[in-house]
Amino acid sequence: MIMLTGLQKIYHGGTGAVKAIDNVSLEIEQGEIFGIIGKSGAGKSTLIRCINLLERPTAGRVLVDGQDMTSLSEVELREARKSMGMIFQHFNLLSSRTVLGNVAFPLEIAGISRTEREKKAVPLLELVGLTDKKDVYPAQLSGGQKQRVGIARALASQPKVLLCDEATSALDPQTTESILALLKDINIKLGLTIVLITHEMHVIKAICDKVAVIEGGQLVETGKVFDVFTNPQSATAQDFIKAVVNNKVPDTLAALLSDAPVAGGNLVMRLSFFGDATNEPVIAGLIRRFAVDVNIISGNIDHLQDTPYGTLLIELSGKDEDIQNALIYLQDLDLRTEVIGYVARHAHAAG
Ligand SMILES: Nc1ncnc2c1ncn2[C@@H]1O[C@H](COP(=O)(O)OP(=O)(O)OP(=O)(O)O)[C@@H](O)[C@H]1O
Ligand SMILES: [Mg+2]
Image (cartoon, rainbow, N blue to C red; front, side):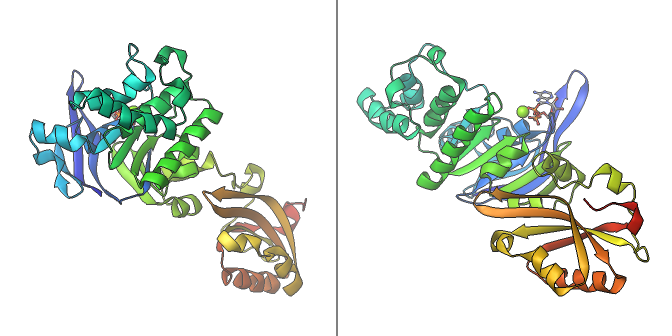
């Protein structure tokens, strides 16, 4: 659906050249919700604006539905942009127009008659739950309602892609949830491909299928949200995930850990469960089968969209041989095991 190849954007400002996007290649498939996460200044807005060519890339290719966006003339580009709606952090509504007027505005620009415009805009207001606000002006709306108008307006030209630049960053957590739910709803109902950028991992966690992590204009990691959440490779991704998944080894324990087995010591490990495996009585099975004690240090079960996902940080104590057998048993199960290290037995009191 969208393919970026070797994308580069260099800004030439007063302070010299800034490489905002540095050789980014990625593919976004039809119908998916693709999240791009990065810290402030990472190049997120530049990247998303390169997709509809609001920013012209310095180098690289942008293919949307097989069409090379960088090769289009201004007239062709204006036409191609109709297939890409966009919503913004600060909504960018026209204050002098009513809700209906805002939603119908892109249609007015396209030269569509008033009756036709209304015919198209009214169902969109219904879709975003604003039917009763049709004749109200933006100043009379809450932030969440304004973003709903933004979404309806972006859908007016029946786009194939919706680009969202920090669409929930100006909203409180509850309103954020409802806007994200609306985006997911639209994604399913209309089969719309959504690209959203954010600096918040919980936004990615709530609705995205895939995620790309960018830093300093470069792509540092990309993959299915599930894979990146459960097994982040880059330090940046690990940092972002910390904000939403608490499976950190407590500092007091971390200070006592060694990488190599300590004779007669305890094994500290993290177990990650996905899907149906969250229902398995893993710990009970472990204790029943082996002469080991299990101390749970921390744990949580959460949902990544509809799939349950849990992590447990545990400490195993027992004879070295029993611990090793227990480890082999765990590694054979349908879960992810990660040996964190070893501690001398006396060092950590069971809790
Ligand atoms: N028009 C411009 N001229 C010069 N430099 C720019 C311009 N727009 C962005 N930059 C620079 O490019 C880099 C990336 O900016 P960008 O706005 O894409 O980041 P961002 O990830 O969207 O940040 P934020 O989370 O703060 O919105 C930054 O260093 C920024 O200062
Ligand atoms: Mg930005």
